[in-house]
Image 1 (cartoon, helix red, strand yellow):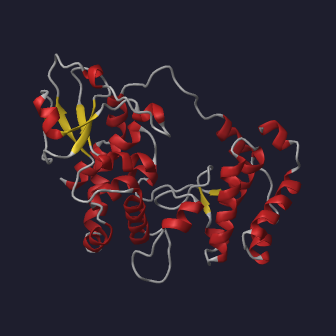
Image 2 (cartoon, one colour):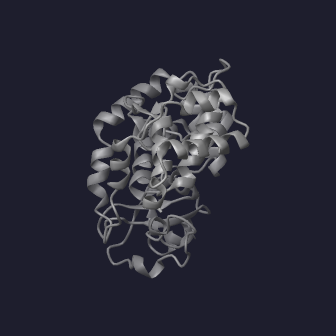
Image 3 (cartoon, helix red, strand yellow):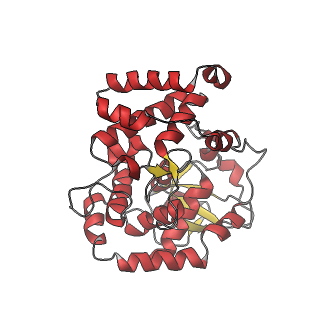
Length: 317
């Protein structure tokens, strides 16, 4: 599909995008303002085609955790958390998501706003759509970006990652349109500011089904003789199957306890959890709640979700 798509000239493809945007109600002024003068960005194509393929098996989790939940990011997270403490109770009440989890997402996505990307979003999205490998996805995001401009978001502020994500939480334009919120009641939705970014992440998590009052998971003690494979999941996830396949069957905390697997942190006995011991026998193990699956909806990677949960726990200490 990619080769076939690129046989079409970039200007001709932009005319097609303009027609699709027009059909979705985007104004002529915005269509012209966003699409005029765009050229393909070869760097974006190179980055997209260089994405790693599937490995034969997952690499160890421990080195990733050591890199992404180190003392530096923990101290920065705690400092940001303290600086913004006055606005957090209201956000937690409104959305039901613990603030440390929101800060852990912010820290992982952009180092608490330290880097958000400097690619022109319109050019990147147009390039990726024209490239054709995932045309439907990226054309939809380009049209969503135009709708953002129609809502009043300045065109010159739309910079972010090469893949089209932007702001402190690295939302795609369609996610911004659906879930970004005004966190400080100033009449604007600016996810390059902490109040709006934190509230918007909270809104995302609430929409994804975060269960208030439950942790993302807890550390667990597993007997050395325990056969984890005997409790492998029998379910096939509709998306991110390789990620979910690494988790066990669902059982209550009490049921796991009866099998010899003990939670090392407070959690209700009736909470349904799955067992995850990513690096095998004798290494750290976790009992994961449904809230872990919510983190996976933000980024479907066990490495990402587990490190977010552990970073949140450290920020909260």
